[in-house]
Image (cartoon, rainbow, N blue to C red):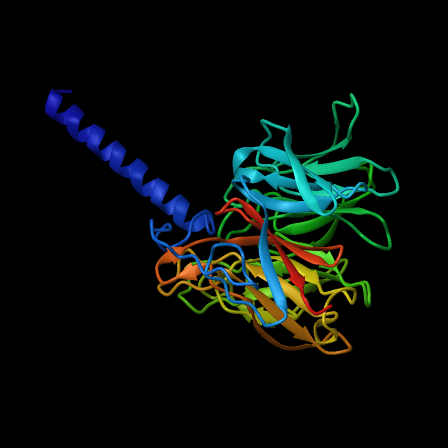
Length: 395
């Protein structure tokens, strides 16, 4: 080949690589960054007795918000150990951090586990004090804290693709360990059936089996302490426009299928992806969501409001973190939402609880996990690298 031919070939290869990279990003990396600009160097402070964060956050009367901990880039999942210390997974940093507590305040901060592969899920087995379970993208490890225990891998997990978070939780009744595993793609037929599903296992990793399937990316889940049912947020696919498909909160039950990749929302067949012809409705046997929410809000952490320390009007409702859109012409999310439920756990409506992390085209923060502990609501923010604490000042 002459130099001109080689040059043209090189340009072609580079062009194909760039296009491939753009396609992979568009289909797989939803939620990695917002669709709006980073914070500008401006004074956006709006401190009040209710709000001492230095951010222009709006919250209902009778509540206060403060920055509980800072210097935590990539803060995601939070968990409290038996001594009342908080542990925080910092997925982008590859670190799990301990916040040492005294009298409800952080007195020291330690990066205990380092050089991890996208750590996310954290869970404590309180039957064995000091035993921490944590999930990386490709495995689950358990380790005895404050000891020489090097940790034991109890399960291998599938890795690769755009959804790499793995979240853990112990069921309140069966005491099994649950793990959520997102899809490897925006929308596709998975080759590995462990993807787009929730699995459960014994605490030692044995009896690893499927619990629920058809869940594109159920990053967070929790259990209602009223009826014991398992609830999880699920993020819908991209590339169907600004308003489709709806994001979901599902009640997760063993053996149930929630429709992805061929169904979304209230049993709607995704004809943009699914070109098959059917004699009967292919979504008929899938589970409809308990709650539908605005598309591309990216719902993550969810927690039921306890009775202790909170107004009675809020008892047993859900607080949900909307991480925020990245591929919507008008950004949405970036807030905490209250999901109102009736006495039987049926959905009534949802309303904003705390807003203000989105200011025009400026993103100040992105809420992730929400955890109630000792009368306070703790919220992680992986953009600002802080933990907020919200309390009811009248209770």
